[in-house]
Length: 87
Image (cartoon, rainbow, N blue to C red):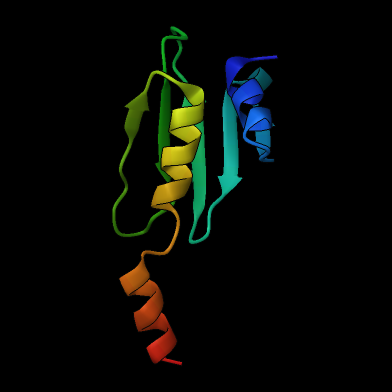
């Protein structure tokens, strides 16, 4: 089991695992989040399908990468309030 898959399980999350456990796709609140191990195995990149800001960020720890990616994919308080006002 890779460190990425172990971190995913330790966090109690499920996702699509690919490339022998070196790549994970998670469903965030607003969009999909990807976490991939670097080819050297020294860290993890995370990014999401955000149509406005496509940010790729590097983390040394797989759990930190997963949590940060999912945090970016959640609604912020102001966005949630604005969406509810429009209903």
